[in-house]
Image 1 (tube, helix red, strand yellow):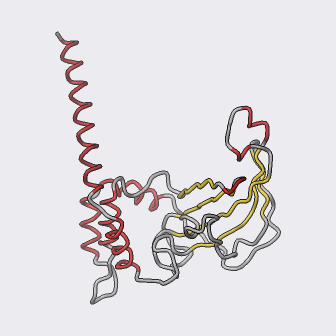
Image 2 (cartoon, helix red, strand yellow):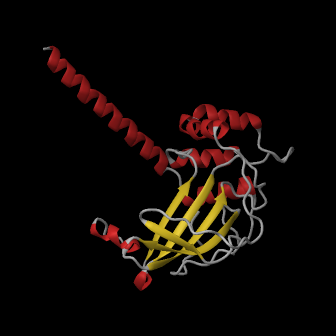
Image 3 (cartoon, helix red, strand yellow):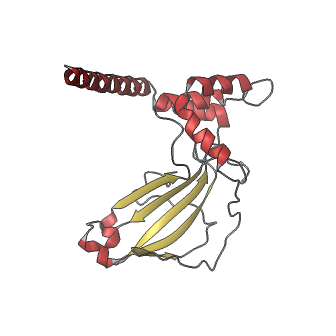
Length: 226
């Protein structure tokens, strides 16, 4: 009897978890891309020709030579032993193109590997072990909370407090940034003479300065992600 109750409780908990996840997804599906774009522009302004998020950034060009020994375990063209051109972009979170480099905010890194025959492989990363939004609604609501007050020209502290109190999925990254993310400085001018880094799987070969402007993606659909 006790064992049956244990199984029943187990399935009840699974059902409740599935329901909560469904509700979270449904809540996130209420958000549209137009709403997010409008909120970003409301929070950071409109900057023609610039990305709306992770606006401030710098790019680098290079090549990755994957170890051919890894081909026995991996089918990726990255490990065929040939040099693969790479476009990298390092960025600051937010939509302010003039944000200070020492700002305590997530840093982004996007990589575009230009594989043979015109195919691409993208990797997009941030330097925190979690994202601040578990569902799109949290992302949208934060941008709305960051919208400057018409009188002060700054976000309303009460709106920010209300957002933090009503969106627990935001707390993880906020706490991490407060405790771990020490301000750093991004390069503001070209740097040369970089030393290639090596690992057991690949070698990178920098080919240009980190101050280079971001090239367009090979498929011409837009600039590098992140």
